[in-house]
Length: 274
Figure 1 (cartoon, rainbow, N blue to C red):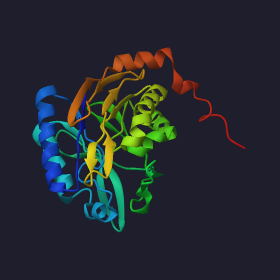
Figure 2 (figure 1 turned 90 degrees about the vertical axis):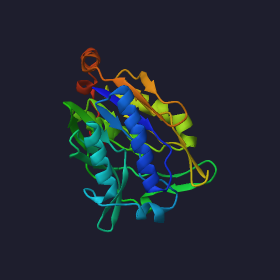
Figure 3 (figure 1 turned 60 degrees about the vertical axis):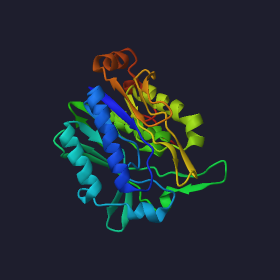
């Protein structure tokens, strides 16, 4: 399987975002001919305003964003992971990933489990849990015969989720993100490589880049694809763009055979804390 991660600078203008993202996906598909394209978190709208983010939320299935990406996947004949967008379900809003098959049909939906609550070094407070509900389900999906585990951004800091995805048979784990510049500079690459090594999985991590809200917030970028040995296979420079790599299942199986971490994992399987 050939996979592509897309790096994008999104704003709070949903219509403009969708059109510009589609243009970038089209260029990536034309140039690299991937089987699976993965977009960053909050691809339809990003802003520090909880009100605007809530207003951008739509029902999934249904809604403009859902139909737009379903049609894009079908038109380009590509498997498409939208990264994430705001989903409205009753009174609740979720940060939700959607995966579409080549025919435009929905293959999987994942609601972000771990919400980003933090105070940045400059004093800026970010509290996703104040306006976004937590997902509960661990989700893996088969894409062209490859088992894909789903995570979003802040989930990256919780290895137990990744181990659960590994137990569910994941060969690739996707981590669409809008990692802040401050945390990304120190933690993005090291956490991604650690998860790849621990799970012996490929990691596909598209991240938003650049600023939003008139420069108030900045995302780290550095979207990358990492192999099961923890090596960076492809990476986007510090601007909008895309990176592509081939997944080698035989190489992955060789790593898992030489060092069978899954069967060696004792704490999760045998020991109980007292």
